[in-house]
Picture 1 (cartoon, rainbow, N blue to C red):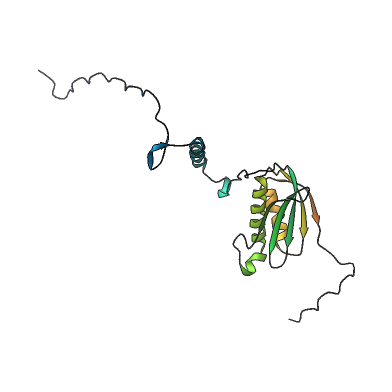
Picture 2 (tube, rainbow, N blue to C red):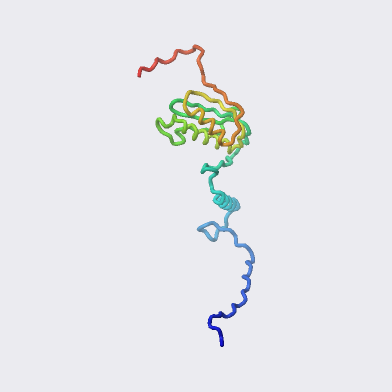
Length: 185
C-alpha cells in the first residue's frame, strides 16, 4: 500500500549558468548610455556613505576634502566675539583665509547671533571648512567681549584639532582716542 503523505522525490537542481560578461553600468533612467568612470565612482562612494551612516558621529556632517585643497597643516583661528555677533576666520600662518563663518551665515538672526551656542556652531563650520584643506593644529586669537569666546574654543577642541596656543588680542587703548559718551539707560 502506498503512503499518501509522502511526496515524490524532487528532481536534481541544475546550477544556473554563469553570465558571460558583466553588463556595463548605465545611468539611471537612461539604459542605453553607460556611466562615466567619475559617475560610477561617485555612486560607489554614495553607497559606502549610506552604509557608514552618511553623517559622522552624533549626526555631524563629515569633513569634505576641499576642491583645490591647499594642504595646510597648521594655522590660526581668529575669533571676533562682539555682543551682537560672533565671527570666526581660519587662516594659514601667512594670513591667507582657508575658512570663515559668522552667526548670520549660519542662520541666526537678531539677538540670537550673540549667544554662546551661535559661537559654537560658527566655530564648527569654519573649522570644518579648514579641515577640508588638511588643517590639524591651530593657534587661537580671541578678540572682543562677547559670549561666543569660550564656546568657540571648546568647539575647535571638540572637532579634534590640536590647539597649540590661545591668545587674547582684544585691542585695549593706552589712553588714545576719546571714548564715546556713556549710555544713559
